[in-house]
Amino acid sequence: MVVCFPGGIESLNLFFYIFRNDGFATPVSRRTFFDTSGIMAAPVWLLAVAVPLWLATCWWLRRRLYGKRGALLADGPPATLFVTAHPDDEAMFFAPAILGLAPAPRRLLCLSSGNYYKEGEIRKDELRESCTVLGIPPSQVTLIDHRDLPDHPSVEWDVVLLSALILEQIEAHRIGLVVTFDAGGVSAHANHKSLYAAVRFLISEGKLPKGCQVLTLETVPLFRKYASLLDLPVAWVRGPDVLFVLTQEEADRAKRAMRCHRSQLLWFRRLYVAFSRYMVINSLNYL
Ligand SMILES: [Zn+2]
Image (cartoon, rainbow, N blue to C red; front, side, top):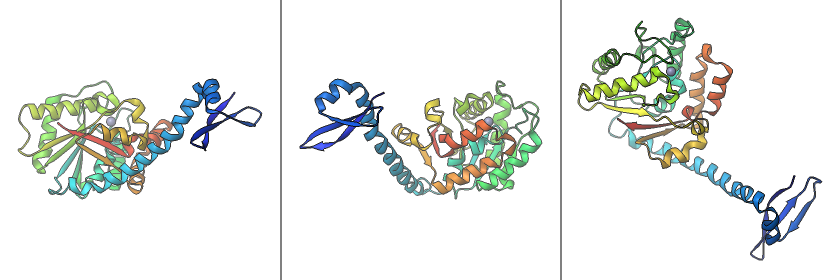
């Protein structure tokens, strides 16, 4: 195997090395380099420039976006209701928005106990623990355990029932901002997508109180989903209505919240916690 990369600048001419399996490096002219090894050199050359540039952009954006949070809440933090489908959704998907919207008063409405594997009772306690870590006290958490709203990846919940339960919370607590999934439901779970259908229904029927807005969490393609912070430049360029990115300290807190869901911490979820962009980035759009 031959590995090549640019070596430096000499009299304004780049000179290059060709590294061989025997460990020796042979300096060659630019012409020789591109003539004999151009195919391999181009990607390496690009990587040598692009990777540091991308990392620097991520670092700069993280600082810049954190500084802009104050402006987002300048008009007075709205009472916010996070609407989720299962215990752990709040930590797996919405932690950046929940932490980013502090000090706004935040509530959580979870529409099932997550009883797919008959662990509903355990998961109720885990939800309260996780919310406490995220700054939402148990008194601000409502969990609905309704037989017509089963935790199931292919069951679409009844939109009329759902929207009535959501509206009840909005009116009872004078909610100014609702945050939930978008049409893709992040993981394409049918229960997640039902929540989006329910808030859409409330809007189309004109049932939301005046001034109450809805933000939906953007579903991104798989290759972006597991890019962690490296997705930040792409998320920013796409220009969502609201973009939250957590500081390192906050990201650790989000992970701590996720660890409260002990019954769910299988090996693939541990990988999710390590690599998912939803543990550090939330891009949201108004509905
Ligand atoms: Zn879920």
